[in-house]
Image (cartoon, rainbow, N blue to C red; front, side, top):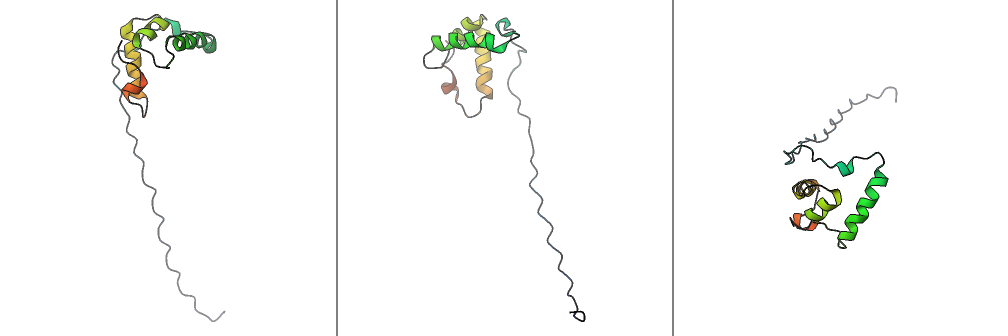
Length: 105
């Protein structure tokens, strides 16, 4: 053992680099700024959103609402409600437009 010559160890292969992840920011179409919804300005979310949820569910047993129903519940113009729904649909992953809401009525 003492007189044995040690063979030089072969260099270990360099560890493979993990693939670099590239993040691309996703720009969503929203050019109108903030939609003014005074009904959603609150200090206690549960107290405000609970009745709103009930009102929306009563108006639509299927769980889907129209822009008009949302406008009535939030007391905002139908155009703002439509914009809010279209924005939600555009950022909801894996949902087709027809499955998310019932159109423009």
